[in-house]
Image (cartoon, rainbow, N blue to C red; front, top):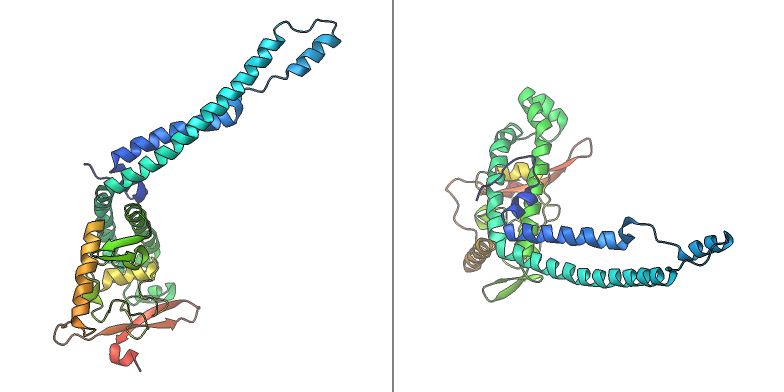
Length: 314
């Protein structure tokens, strides 16, 4: 399978191209939609006003057209044929929608794998810029840093948008591969929204956040990544701050998993966290735990600054 990593293409299109069955169904659906549109518009031909035709003939001293009855009957039949065809096509439309959903579900792994080189290509481009933007939070601080930081600041937003579109495509494909609102992991049925965010981006969540405990959301254990609320640690935004953080954190391992890989990673790390009972995993000797503290700039902008956990708690 040839993978297209062109930065000009929509990542979702690249992913769906990896599911030929879906593209075939999509083409069939396009043909159905075109025919439905034509039927609803009357085929483009203006309706014949037979009554007006009879009136014009009589007022001109001419007889009633001899084929009037046949033409009226044919017009009625044509209308009935169009209604019948429209009903059939609407049923076909529903069937194609169902077949398309099944095709995406069956080909989701291939689609997600097709996105991996797209993500890798972006990360290779973005990492040098992210390194140049360490500690830069606004245009002025970029200017103060120098030309390299200014160039990185100017070009980084486009990369942020590209990253968000890749993750959006990943979400749509993964979500389509899960029938219903719940994702089954072992014997548990968890809400999809509880498993996909962050876990689908960072392969080693509990290594990055060793204090995480399943089911705990009291805000006392704050994740190391940018969040708007400590009570919702897995609600993140794919903005400039998030992308800079995942690119520059020394432990983060970015990935783009299949549904099976996501299930296994979540289950393994959840089980490990439960066994540790809330105790942090052993860290490298001398490593200092850092936590985000929300700060505001003079221009109204906001960002997180990372401080030692002991300092941040004061």
